[in-house]
Image 1 (spheres, rainbow, N blue to C red):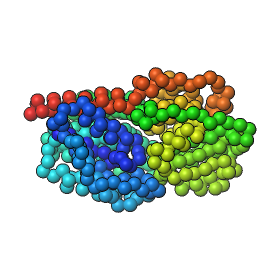
Image 2 (image 1 turned 135 degrees about the horizontal axis):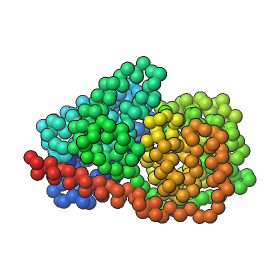
Image 3 (image 1 turned 45 degrees about the horizontal axis):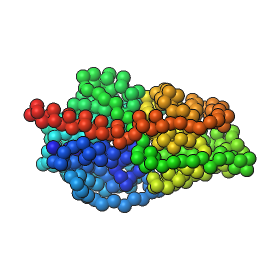
Image 4 (image 1 turned 30 degrees about the vertical axis):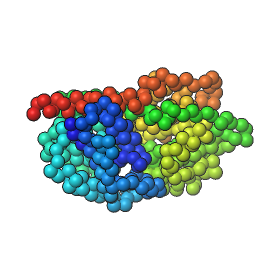
Length: 399
């Protein structure tokens, strides 16, 4: 059996899609037989301009071939990311020309990787298994509401409809996506395999250093700094409101980092905020150990009420208190599944301060063992891998 996997990001790149794709490859190797061949098409590491990672153009190991496409440089802007993806798509088509597979799998936060998967599956006459990690048109409807680019949305919606309807199966990482996808492709089989907790988080302990009057609690955010996270809309004001009571550390990069830096330059709380570039995952574990509270935030857009951020799984695995500015499905998930997580409305500074006070007032140990067992990525991806191979076998039978 031959499986093609399309993922724009793949290790050693740092992103939710990268970690998810690698976990799937490992799971497929575990549950598949010795004749299973996996072909991964991805990009050379490019997630963050401030974190350069080296990787081989091609790797072959134990039935897995990984081919990486070098991309033009970009600064996470829409135009340069679009140009980079066009280059990726052209090179991917060249790499797969004349080859066939029993199933094409595409994991996609942006719609275009899914659309590329649909194109390649059609030419290979193979079933298409989509892994949808974000609702691109839904998000763009919010972000482009006042932009001239909003006139392109009907074209993206048409592409989304054709892509989703061409799939033999669609997986969603958030149950909040289901109504959107059902409205577009009512007859496509759906599953929900969420993101999960990677083994390095399950195998580590993260003790809290403790706070004193001289050492106020450290609130840590680690991840992308983009419009979706909206850190520029909350961190400068929150740092001013919690001056002398909390320290902030933001680790990451993205399209809104410069805006965050500009907002911090005029904030009265700038002395309590430290901005750092992205770090390798081994170092990130140490950052989590040093933190007292882990911070998560999504911008105040209707589309983000449907998402379930991958970051919250590793946050929860640390056993540290979580301060989360989220709404909708993510807020419901945190309240029902994650002990010692305080939720406030996105971009609500007063609400954030109140949630911070509730975290400081709580006592007792934090027990998240059942959560860690239920959402171990290894178990989730094994189930997904079996589902993919079942879909491929069904496709072979129908031929």
